Length: 301
Image (cartoon, rainbow, N blue to C red; front, top):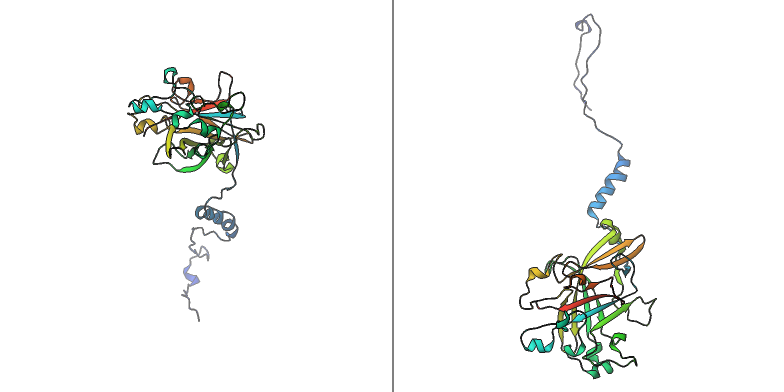
C-alpha cells in the first residue's frame, strides 16, 4: 500500500479574494520520444567514431602526363654512373663529365661485356631498377607505399641499324617504357602506376602526392646502387640535409590526379631536379625531338 503526504486546508482561511491554490512547477525541460533522433543521428555518429573508414581496395590505372597534364605515350629513364677510372683515381666523376654529364652512361662502365648484351646473359637480363614510392620525402621517417621493377633491355637505343647490340662502351644505360595499347612492341614495365582512386578523389584538389626514389640492382656485381634525379658535384661531401625534404636531391615528387574522370600522374621536379636548371634530370616537355625523360645519377650516402 502506497502512502502519500496529505494536507488539510480550511477554506475559511483562504481569504475573501477567492479559492485559488498556487502549485509550484519545475521549468526544467526533459525531452521524450527521441527514438528516431537516436536511430538516425546519434547511432550513425557513434558508428563513424568506432569503425575504420571503408576504402575501396581496388587499384586502378594511372597514366603518365607531362607538365601540362597531357598524357604521354612513352618516356625514357637514363642512368648515369661514376666511371671506373675516376673511382680508381679517387675522384669519382660521371660519364661524359666533359659535356656536363647529361644523359645516360654506358654498360661497359658497370661491368658488362659484349657477350652479356648479345646473348642476353642472366647477369644482364636479371639486372633491374626498382622505383620505390613513399608517403613523404624524409628518409627514416617515411612509409613505403609500393615499388615497381623495370628490368634491363636491349631496345632501339642499344641496337645498330641491323638490329645487333651496340658495343657495351657505346650502349646507353637507358630504358624506354610505353603505353601497351599504343606501342605493344615496346617495354611496358613502369609505364602505369596502380593506386586507390578513393584516396585521390578525397585529396585536396583531387591531387594525391607521393615521393619516388630509384635503386639499380646490378646482377653482375651483386650491388644495389642508390640513384638521384640530381647530380652530386662533390660525392665525398653529401649531407643528409641535402638529400631529404621537398627541395632535396633524392626524392622525386609524383602527383596523382583525377582530371575530369581521367586518372593521371606526373613527375614534379624541384629546383635541383629540373633539367632546365642544368643540375637535374626531369624533362617531361623536351624542346628537341624525342620522348619525355628522367635521368638519375649515382649518389654516395
